[in-house]
Amino acid sequence: MTLFGGVQAVGIVCSLVKAKLIAIWIGPIGVGLFGIFNSVLDMLSQATQLNFRQSAVRDVAAASCTEVPRVAGAVRWWAKRLGVFGAAVMLVLSPLWSLISFGHCDYWWAFASLSVAMAAMSLSAGEQVLLQGTGLLRTLGKVSIWGVVMATVLIIPLFYFLRVRSIVPAIVATSIASLVAFMLVSPVKSAKLPRRESVAIGKGFLRLGLFMTVASLASTGASYAFLSYLNVTASTEITGLYQAGYTLVVKYVGLIFTALAMEYYPRLAQLNSRPGAAALVVSHQITLLMWVMVPVIVGFVVLDQFIIRLLYSEDFMQCLPLVTIGIGGAVFRAVSYCMAYVIIARGDGVIYVVTEIASAAIGLALNILCYRLWGLMGLGISYVVWYAVYLAMVWSVCHWRYRMRFTFESLGAFLICTVVCASAIVIKMLY
Image (tube, rainbow, N blue to C red; front, side, top):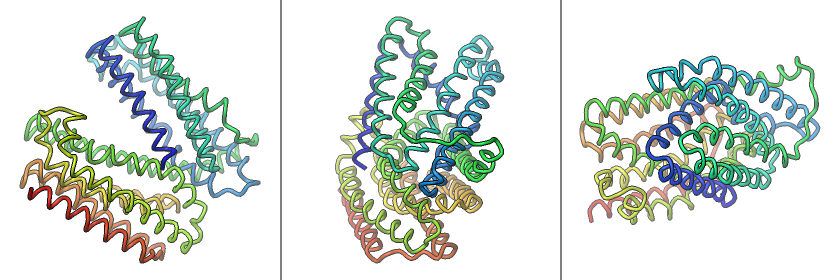
């Protein structure tokens, strides 16, 4: 958690530096272009890479020492092909992206140039899979930091000298810097496999990745649907307040989960055929997360006004009830996160898609209902109820489908965390 929390902290600092320099040297048009190009790049990479960055970790982690070079060879084989495929799609559809984003085709060359970034991102993802799956986490952390810092150093002179023309070169340079860092350091050896064997090995993680992509698109679609509903029925200002509160409650707290998943997911994948051992790993993870979440949530509740003023401004204080109540949902989210990874580690793609689509539908319905009843405060209540329901769903899958039994220690930690955090929220709301 310390290692990858630090990596993400460095990444956030570098992102803030880039955003600040773009705002100073290029202005609002630079921020807008940066957002548009990155949004298209992220969306297309997610669609064309089939989420193999997550799904392939399971195969690498579960492989024996003698099998790792073969699996590594298949991962790199697919990373190259998916990268070429994504680059080709970006290149062919560049006039369409320009038309959709700007209303004309004048920026087709910019989107065409991003095809280089598409290929580099796919190759980098393959190296990340191998380092995470083989447990070389310290190396992965170092390489990630070097890539981010090197990219930041490279793009600063681009911003200064090229100004608005630097946006696309900066995005491409960032992806290439990350790839170079991985290629120079990665110690994982791979075997050269015939095409048929690479395809056979890759079928498993690509199938799971396809299911994960569908689930991710369902979640993104539900989020977009609610933002559109809020923008139409309320106002753009209310939509902005919700987005600010949601970012505080979900994304910043989620950094803890992401940091822990780097080690937790491969370890769980190694034990997918041993339910008892896997249940013990999940129980330990739940216990750890609960003791981490208690000070985080209580501190968040105590300092909620200060945090909003620090990260946003006084104008965003209207989202305070959403933040104060919604942070309580992090307790249920933490436990459900631990159990949801069991489904992925098992490679149970159909069940994962069903639970995620059901969760997205329930979350959308709760958001609309609670907003109509209680406004922005209702969206905080909705978040808590949503993840409580989601926790019940994934617990049912682990309990009934996988026959997993969790320890009393993890249950006790969950109950203590729930009571302490609920008490903090009630006291703050009454105060």
